[in-house]
Length: 403
Ligand code: HEC
Ligand code: HEC
Image (cartoon, rainbow, N blue to C red; front, side, top):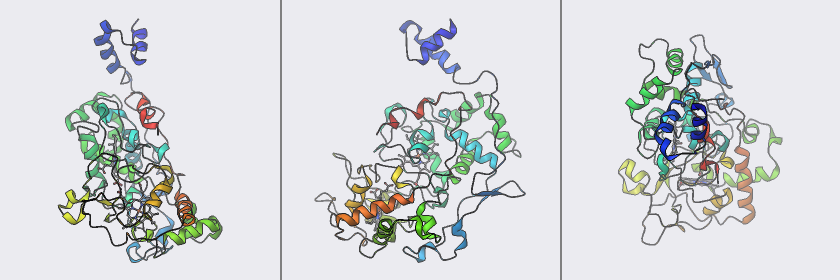
């Protein structure tokens, strides 16, 4: 009887008189009765090497080059900024389990992966993401690939570290809606987490804490490295990795006419600055002031962080607003004339690299073909088979998967 009732509950077959009972059973069914056999990995993710003191250090080809990214505007053999690394394998793996577990949201409905789904380039295929209770977010979800290299976070650059960033989604009422107390309480109530936190933070008296949730999420996100695209192979000297057409696209990309690489500077494909480029807002919505608010500076009105273009083919729709559905639409924007999408009466101080490149249709196609060579998802981490909390993975297959 109890089982049949639970079955009904999970299928949404609510029978009004049983509603309350159903709710009780459903919340019970959210955690395992006995502790599931979940272990944490003791090896580093690919591309990381393990040190004697149990830390993972990132190794990549760009460490062979010592010229700084800032000094160039498209040189192929250019160094990357220093990455966040040095976390233990257990912290990275605990971060992975937390990232996919809907227990992080107050109503157990969303995980980080709902809006940053590895199947969608760690984004969600939506113009603007949807938080708890159907709250539409103001902006689209950026990719998390290579976030280990970034020095600021969010479209308006309002957070300076992954740790600071994570407080946003976890505790904002419209996103995951949690509170620090509630988060710790629900993790403690899931039988398995106490042991997992102890494994990841063995020397701490209270291993299960908000700080350690955030450290683990940071550790996991810093392991999302994508540096082996066909572009990278070309950059390291394997000429055949790109077709002639894609090389032509790369040349348009770094030309002084298109100027893409002056902001989307290789190898990260962002110079990590904020730029006002005047992309349009969603139909009928007011101007998103962007970085004006962060820096309290009028000249940055409508300014956004230059996003990386790595795995860009996977993360449509594009821009902070998700206004452009395809990569071609995004590329075409730049040739529409300086400020063409800025509404009349709106005074934006556009970046001087936004000009009138008058690219031909063929050159735009080539740009798109080139941007598609920046895909590399070979180190996509495994989605856990089950959430440690026992909560169902429904959040990974809801409306967010629809385009
Ligand atoms: C409801 C959807 C949603 C959920 C859930 C969510 N995010 Fe996000 N995330 C977004 C959106 C939208 C943005 C951009 C917001 C902005 O710029 O104002 C973002 C931005 C980010 C960024 C900044 C990336 C960059 O390059 O600037 C990081 C990192 C991030 N999220 C990590 C997380 C983590 C970790 C979690 C889980 C604790 C999480 N997100 C949960 C939608 C979501
Ligand atoms: C002045 C700096 C600058 C230049 C030059 C520039 N971009 Fe951008 N790019 C940005 C900024 C800033 C954004 C985010 C704007 C927004 O969200 O409104 C962006 C966004 C994009 C996006 C969408 C990324 C995403 O994750 O949604 C693509 C694609 C893109 N640019 C391609 C190009 C191409 C191709 C060129 C050259 C024709 C170019 N950019 C030139 C600054 C620049």
